[in-house]
Image 1 (cartoon, rainbow, N blue to C red):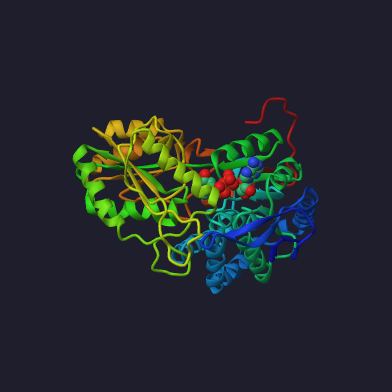
Image 2 (cartoon, rainbow, N blue to C red):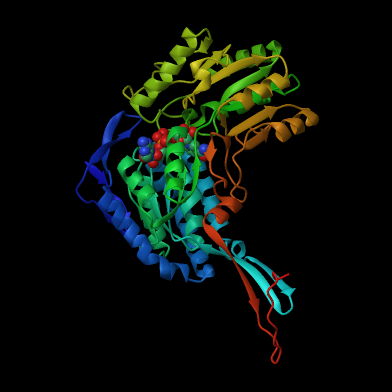
Length: 496
Ligand code: NAD
């Protein structure tokens, strides 16, 4: 069976050690093995990154950017291979994998602007013959730890920008879909990246803990579930590292009585069930303002959901694919059961779908649950599956209160034709990314991505302008070149 190893100092390597199965979620079969890095292997990656740092940091920024331009072309050239790898290990449909890759490429495009992004700030004559400027220097070796649900895009949120800012990088991707990161590392090498600047270690908690404990790693970007994000953030901080840890979500969409309901239903279908709901920006709760709106939504959704097609990656007519593992599928099914037991109404039950030719895959059909209330387990938890829950409220204020009281604050959306309501909503809601008639308001690469409340631990959001700040430290230099012959006397007062 194929073994997926690591990429250290410009080479793939497969040292002996612990391994884990990698499943094809569509067939339900373990088709590969992934090596789980030992502390020694992580150390090798850190050594390689540390050795590469001095030279890379001093490489002109335009040269660093040129490698990113080449990397972008290679990503486009090899798009089909990358999306096939995503499909085989994650299970998302080819069109969805292509969308993920495209959003990742946009982060590379942003990184290509490094010469402009790193120009710094300059002030002349802040005092007599004194100039002052701030420059943004790299941190050193930085690390990224990423989740299974975007095996290309989330790593691409991190390493292109970190590298172009002059850092060297150790990536620890999800052990559930490990091949994509290795493929990206090979393309970067082909683009001309010097060995050691980008390293990939596959692994689990052992590798992560080594990253968190090693003092040579200066910063950690994490994306994953909230309990692990919180763990990473506290441990990284206790060890003196800079850290941004993005966590889980429960994204609500408010549908106002004046909304275009047909449009809202179309948007909700894609945002709730696309990628089997395994997106941190998936809309998993509709908050209908008024029973009339709720009844219409449930009725139209029910009809539209009959046409949804769940299936394998390589049939582009499928709408979404399987869940990542059997355990995860069972967990999602458990939330549906609990909702029914706690009094909700399962209007469309996607459990046990038939997918011809893929009877042993981890498939779950689209599910719609009505009359969900705040105390239900299925409402409190992040389900991360193709399950859309409907809640009924009487006013926009009640809808906003629900959202604000939820543990998570990643994304949200309002469907309305009323500009005043939309403005009030975006101004006041306690959520980091807001859509107005836009169901998946994932910021473009030249803005930054991040939630509020327990969806993000840390101060700076991922990628974009915040990413540049995260991967650099500011140094401010104040310089005086006195005119010849000018001598200043001694002064003991504070310079002003
Ligand atoms: P996860 O938290 O299980 O794993 C994320 C990473 O942490 C993986 O690399 C994994 O190997 C590592 N990890 C897992 N358990 C660990 C432990 N005990 N100690 C140390 N490291 C550990 O998340 P996942 O299941 O891969 O991804 C899904 C989650 O990610 C969802 O909660 C989703 O909302 C979240 N997510 C968030 C965003 C965002 O931007 N906020 C984006 C994508 C996914």
